[in-house]
Image (cartoon, rainbow, N blue to C red; front, top):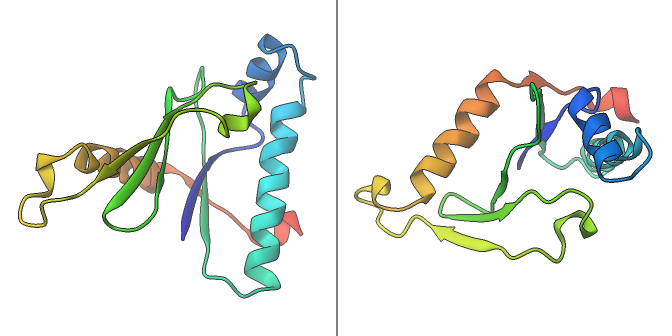
Length: 129
C-alpha cells in the first residue's frame, strides 16, 4: 500500500485550518496522527506500507484519490472542515480496458499520483512512533 500525504509541516495546513475556523495546528495534528497510525501498522503489524510526503505551495489539492488496486480509484473533492471527507460523494473510477488504459479517467488520475509520488519525500516511520 502506498500513501501520499501532505507534509505535516506544510504551511498550507495551518492556513487552511485558520480559514476553516480551526486552531492553526488542527490539520497538522491530523496528518501527524495519521502518520503515527501508519507507523504503528508498519512497525508492530509488519504491514508493507510506503508513505511519501509532498509539499503544496499555496493551497490544498482540489481532489484526493485513493487507489484500491491496479484497476480501481476512489476520487472525491477535498473539502476541509467537513467531516474529514467521510460524508462527501465518491466517484469510483475503473480501468476497464486492459488493452488501452488511456480510455478511462483512471489513467490520468494514476499518472497524477505517480508524478506526485516521484517528487515527494520519503517517510521514516521511526519519526512518528
